[in-house]
Image (cartoon, rainbow, N blue to C red; front, side, top):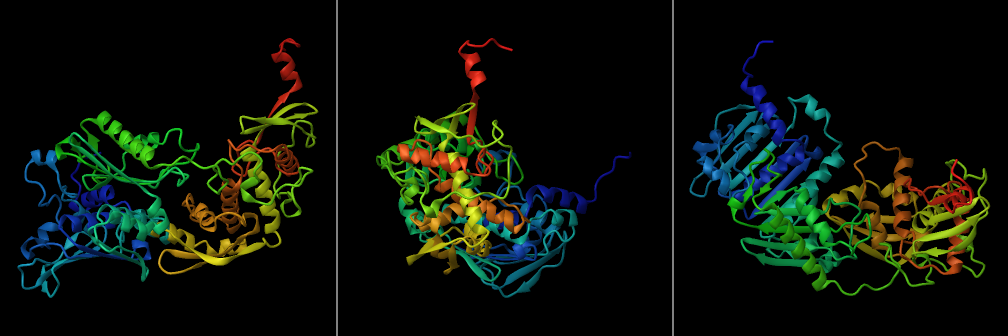
Length: 574
C-alpha cells in the first residue's frame, strides 16, 4: 500500500476526534476560552442535546478582526510562543486546536469585538472551510455558535447518546466550572429552559447552595490547607452525606478541571474507616501550585495532568481532607435513616412499624411472593430455620435440617422489602401523603435525570412535581417509606442512575424499587432484638427468591452437616 499524505480536511477531522468527543467537549473548550479572555459573564444555550446548536457568549476581551481567521486555524494560539512555555502554562487553553477542531466537524460562526474597536467582526466556518471576515455590530466580547455538530462525520454522530444523556453531561460540566469560577456569572439554558444560573458573587458556598440546595451547602465542610508551594481549598461532604459512586468527586488544578485517579484515591482514603463499604463522598477540591510543578500537555483534551512530585501531592490531599473531617465532623449519633447508619439495639427497621411480640411482621409489612424464581435451597424446599443468634451485628446464624446457615441481614432485608414492593406494584402501591410538601433541590444534571422519571415514580407511590428550575416538590411517598425523610428518599433514586438509554419501563421501575430497598434496608452493624431477628428470618424464608438480594448478592451461606463433620475430623475427607 502506497504511503501518502492525508488531505488537510481529513487530518483536521481525525485531530478533532481527540478534542471534540461529544457536545459537552465543545462547551468545555468554549467556556475555557471565555475564562481565558477574562469574562465576567458567560451565557450558554443548548438545543437538542448540543447536536443542533451550542451557543456560548461572553463579555471578555474579544478577538481583533485581523486575527479572527487565524483564530480558527490549527495550532494558532496567543498563549505560547516557545516550547519552554509548555512548562509554565498559566491559561486553560494553549494548544491552539479547539476552534479549528470544532469548526472542522460543525458549522461554526464566531462573532467578536474588542474594547477598542468601533464594530465587531464575524467569521463562518463550514466543515473546516472558512469564509471571509465580515464587519457587524456586536457588543464587546465573543459569541460562538456551533450548529449541526458532526454533520460531516456521520459515524461520530451515530455514537452520540440520546439528548437527555448529552444534556446531563453538559449540566455536570457547567456545574463544575460554576463552582470553580464563582466570581463569574454563568447562565445555562437548555431546550429553552434555564438549567443553571449563578450570581458571580465569588462566594463558593453561595454557588453550592444554588446548585445543590441550601441544606447540602450548609453541611459541606471547608478544606483549607497550605503546604510549601501547594495550596488546597474546596468543599467536602461530611460522613452523613455520601454517594454510591465517585462521579461527584471533582478536582481543579490551577483552575483546570482534571480527571486524576491518584487525587481521587487520596481523597477517598482520607475517609477510611469513616464510611460504609460502597459509599463515597462528594467533593470539589482546588489545588494551586507553581505551573512548572505540573505538566498539562498530556492529552489534547487537557483533562489529564502529571505532577512532578506525585507522592507529595497525594499525601497533601489526603492530610488536608482528613484534617477537615476530624475538625468538623461531630461524634456520630445512633439513628436509623435512609443512609443506613447504625441503630440502637432493639430499634425497629428504619423507623417502620414495630414488630409484634411473636416476632412476625405487621399486616402492612407481610412479605409477598416475587414473579421471578431462583434455584431452591439444598433441601429441595425452603428450610425451616431456627434462629441461633446475631454475629458481629451483621449476620444471623440459623440452624436448618441440613446444616448451618449464615445470613447477611442487610441483603436479606433488601430481598424482603423488594418482594413486598413488587407484589404491591401488580395492583397499586399505597402512598402516604405528607402534611406539608417538601421542596428538594438538585444539581442540574440530576434534575434533568429525575424529570424524565416522574411518570415511573408516580406508579411506584411517589407524588413528585417540578417546582421551578432544578427544584421538585414531594407530596407523597410509598407507605413502606412513610417514616423516612422524603428528601433523602428522593435523592436515593437519582444518585446512581446509569446511562441506560433504552430500558423497558418495567426495568426502570425495578431499578428504582431496588435502589429504594437497598437504602431502606437495615445495615451491617445494626443490632437487632431477638424478635426482629426472628421476623427477618421468617420474612426471608417466605420469599420466592430468598438466595440473593435484588442486586444479585447472596443473602445466605450454607454450611452442610457433612462439611462440619469433616472440618472437625469426625469424617474422613472423600
